[in-house]
Length: 327
Ligand code: WQD
Image (cartoon, rainbow, N blue to C red; front, side, top):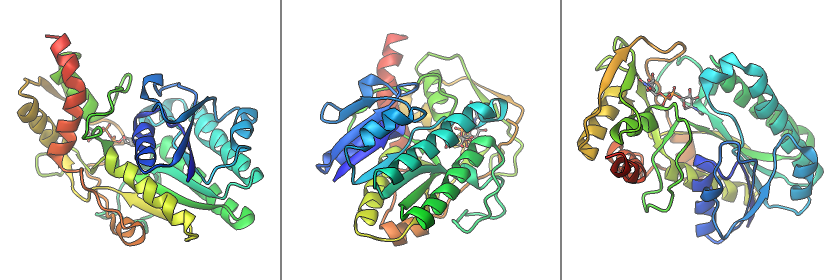
């Protein structure tokens, strides 16, 4: 299969690219390197440097003909999206519409979207399945919902077929150790805890310990990025075999608290991790856990690497060399 990954130089995209290359696909990567890294690019993929805001650049690449387009090019900081919605509207919505329109124009009919659990907002019930109401509480989540809605319109009007993958909290690194490119300025829990363990930061701030959860800290569903990558391959095959448009959750179906993550990181790294409990972060739900039954049923997908220890060990392998550098 000839597969194009928009945003294929980012944290999730590089893992997805690896999964497609490993099974022998011809892989193209379109990325503006705004957060992605040149060092993340696999030698056996073709790289097209460009932005999804540049319609002419997109047209040039898409006119080559691709069996499937995977769209991972987006800003993803929910907090920032509330302060600068225009930035998220432009890149995530306008850029995605450029890409979808260019696919339609060039007869590319198979499309996979990186969507997010952020489309659901505050959970009305747990575990969250795909029938859960979509009431995003941050603008980032709204942008993902807006793209999903446009995909549904293009499916009806232009025969586009798509799979939307609603990731819960992506975490971990390739367990075979092939990926080394770290995200710049991370804000998510696990990379921040890793920065503390490796001496790049002095302490972790725990955003609230008075939630109605077992230990009072926030609970999330962490899903290993290698499991996410596998779901994209399955989604591509699903579309290739002419099957229907589908929206699925991707999660481990297990809730882990902030405290469990910090404690496991202390145990696995053997490093002290200083922490300070501060107030809750606005907009953070107490608990998010996925039902991934639909992904299992329709894509035959099941998480294999999303247990706590594999997530922390595979991430530590990438941070440990920095820890040695920092003494
Ligand atoms: C996890 C838990 C925090 C940092 C975000 C986006 C979401 C999705 C994934 C893209 C929470 C706590 C965190 C810290 C802490 N993005 N925490 N101290 O907020 O669940 O999801 O990333 O699709 O849209 O909102 O992830 O890793 O930031 O937080 O205590 O320094 O860790 O309160 O309970 P989140 P996170």
